[in-house]
Image (cartoon, rainbow, N blue to C red):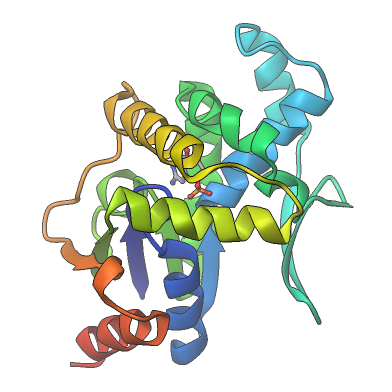
Length: 217
Ligand code: DC
């Protein structure tokens, strides 16, 4: 079974998808974390986003792994725990540009299809219901008002010890929405047949419950 959960930045996808996967006892895959990991890796290696051959070389050697720990789920890039680093402002500022690069998308989609092909899975991202698994058993599209989303992201940043004003965050989110939904490769759009859920009007438990109920019906 494949459950696709797509939506714009900070629309509540991660918490909801994770909760739904736990309730159903199936795998959870955060595809945004994969694009963030590649962004961090390219930054750390000083690879220019215009240098496609170095990007391809990097993609051929890179290994992204997921794991669990007492403090929650972890993500590793070539064995290094990068869970917190991929949420930094530096990575967030670049990830929309990195994730618009065709060769990077092709490589990530291949990995995502392999994981989803081997196990029941909740995948969250931007293009799961449109490109990665257009025949997913269930498709959801989460939305929320930009101010609600900005407040959520500020809370996440606060936990990482970083600060930003609400105005800056709203501007950042609007900019990412624009880049994600107007790019040439797999732009963010609601998939055909996807059920839209406004998470601004629901609690986290309410969001999870709503989706689990639809799946169980
Ligand atoms: O959900 P997030 O904020 O962690 O996603 C980070 C970026 O990755 C976001 O700007 C869009 C991109 N992304 C994508 O293009 N396709 C996906 N399936 C998931 C994320």
